Image (cartoon, rainbow, N blue to C red; front, side):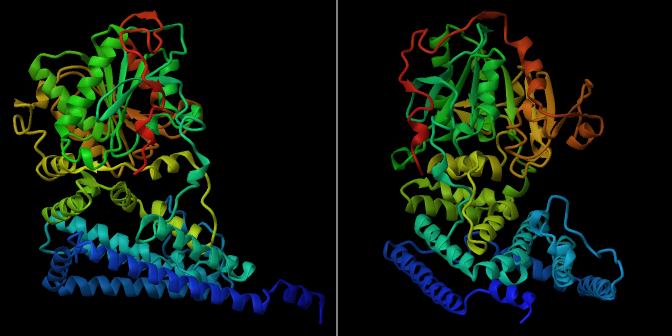
Length: 604
């Protein structure tokens, strides 16, 4: 036996260990299947009947089939083009096999990290698998986009779920067609798959049903200890929110306080993760007296709380508390995502009431016109809303946070679902600690009354932009009555609040509007501290009112780095003179508890 043969033999896993591994995998697989059946039986015993088609995909697929039959010649042409691509791929593979260079027929899209392993390009077999998959996925997407006789909304749904299917069947998601997983399986004698199955079992038990892979080590973070650290105190609370006032870090502060209203779909501390990426901390360093609304994680007792309740027990109650705490009647405000939609609604109500307590407002990734709301609209039709309403009724009047998390994760399934399936279940690795993903996993519930109102009146009917179509306490809401200075932020890669949709707000506000487009997406486009010097942002200094976001962007100027200083340069002149810094408890309100407070600690 040669030295090479001896080394190869030593590198092979022990056959007895491999057999033991296979036995363990079989036992764990049986347990996983048994647990799934038990969960279904228990749900049936509780009277919960699973929907046959909760996402209402069947009608869309029927229209897709009719679209194919309506023009078979177009489909035959598409199939012929796919066949030609396969022929070119085969020629490419044969050329490489002969030792010659050959340019790939198709490449992964920029930012597609699934095929980053060197074997996908260096190994001819895996290169062929990769390219054949990419060609087929591209063909599928083009085929559904070119359907005849299908309305745009249905076509959007077909396109979305076709992409979900293509992402699910990617070769990276299977043991035998992922070179990284194959190496790990050989090197560990299959122990990676054993660990992965155990992780899948643990996740199924944690979620009480279909396994949802963990994105991060949730034990690595603790609120108030290594995340949500900025010092402050809860100075007021209602059933729906706690109001946090943060300690100043400058001797002088702007007279006008800053009130931040985050979304209640997630928890507020996305804006206060760690000191190095905390918007809250940075804002205090710029000289603002910062207040943040920390929404409650509602249980069944709050099922009847409405969108209007969030305005009165949230924003309007916070304004009263800020005045009591500081003596200042007017504030500047920030509304983020659905918090921004609520802020716009509340500003319309305040304008009708002659209430000028908010003197300037910033909207972060916030929509008011939902006519082009992006891919989330795929989930909003009458059948799906009715299914959600039945589900919320079964759950006691709330929508569990996991449902919303799954919806948002589907918008970026390769990054937020399949990458963790590969890491946790196929490679058998523990997810790494990551503050942003810890926050993303810290889900919140939705009160049934509020959620149905929001989906129906905003996404489905788009009533907020129709003057008088909605009302708070009998007062009609009209966005065109809002005349205060506005800073409108959007993000170029935002799948939740697309720039095209956010920009439409400029059509309604009658006051001065500064539009700023940030790089990246819904979260990183907002949480981008200057010290990191990442991404970029665009501004347009002309006084022209643009009809569309594309026209605005064509005349915009790109700037490197964070947009936060641009926002500060806009807000500072609107925030009044400097006054001595104010500590929580200086005013008429006694602090209730230390930040981050108790509401944010309630788990879904």
